[in-house]
Structures are given as C-alpha cells and as structure tokens.
Amino acid sequence: MSVRRWLAGAGVVALAVPTAACGDAAPDAATPDATGTPAASATSVAPSPTESSPSPTTANPPILSGDRQVTIVRIDSFESGLSLTDERLVEVVGDKGRQLFVPTPVDGQTFLIRSYRGAGGGPGTGEPVCWQVQNPGNSKPLVVQGAECRESEPRQLFTIAPNPENAEAFLISNNSAFLRNSQNNGLIMEELGDAAPTDSFRFNDNGPAPSSL
Image (cartoon, rainbow, N blue to C red; front, top):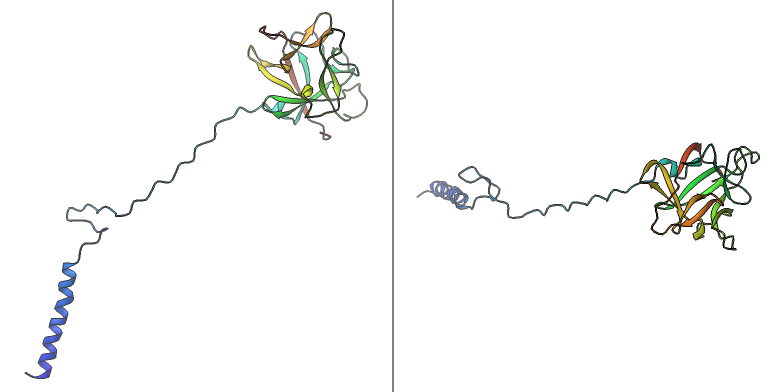
C-alpha cells in the first residue's frame, strides 16, 4: 500500500469519528422536542416580590393646610364672627380684635390656631398669638385667650373635626372640652360628657396665610 492511499484512508476515518460523536450527543435543554414543545428549563426564576401599596390617608382640606387664613363664624350666630381680643375669644359684629386665624396642623386633626390682627387691629398682620384654653378660676367656665405660640403646650392643641351633621362646619375642642356659646358667658370651652356638641363653626377662606408664619 502506498503512503498516499493510507493517508487518504486515515482522513476518512478521522472525519467519521466526529460525525458519530455529534449524533450521540444529548439534545440541548432549550431545543424543542420531537413534538415541537420546548423543553423545560432547568433553572426557575423566582417571581419578584410585589411591593404593597401604602394605605390611603385622609388629608385635611386646603383650608386647614396651614397655608390659608380664615375667619370663623359660629353656624347659629347672627352677623357676628369670632375675634380674639386682649381679654379672650368672643363674638363681634365690628372689626375689634384679631379676626384672622391660621389653623396650623400639628398631627392629624390637631392644630395650633394662630391669630392675626383684623382690619381694626392696626396696620399689617403683626406677629401671631395662639389660642390657649384658660381656667379663670372662681368656678367660672373655661375660656380661650391669646398666648405666645408653643406647640408643646397642650392647652394650645385644638382638635378641628368635621361636623358629621353639617358638611360645611367643624367642631372645635381641646382635651374633650368643646367650644360653644353660652347665654350667660359667651364663648366657653365645656366638657359635654355623652352629650352631642351644641355648636359648630364655618371657616371662611381669606387668602394666603401671612408670610410671617
């Protein structure tokens, strides 16, 4: 046998071996089987956890955002609005005292009620004072007076809540004592026990709160 014919024969054998090896190889996992159905992947991907949506919260209306100043009128009053005079919180028909108020949120429905001068209280709005419950003593009812604003003072933290019987009005309270009108003592703060509040108040928007806030 010549050397040339042996090399040619060896080349045929060498080509035949890889061909047989390819025929014996296992099918790729991602290759469709004979029925045309893709083979299952060996690695499963865990689904991404779904973030829970935050619980909806009930926001205060814009008039109670702390960015608006308001006048406050008792629902059953006759042409009179609330005014913080040098003595106490009263109802007036004229422009006496501080008649512009800025309910400033502290937590939820708890507010500081900042008081500004009205038209008859001198030029400009002036520095605010805050509502504060005061016990005058001598068995007299609690009243609201003006004091330096302090968020840490519990007597200045008022709850302003919608009146469930009147969508346009609010109930004002401090530590379970509600603001109401008394025939003999005017505006007072009184604990009502199980009785329903007798007075509610309308807040009238008077534009942006003073910049000094």
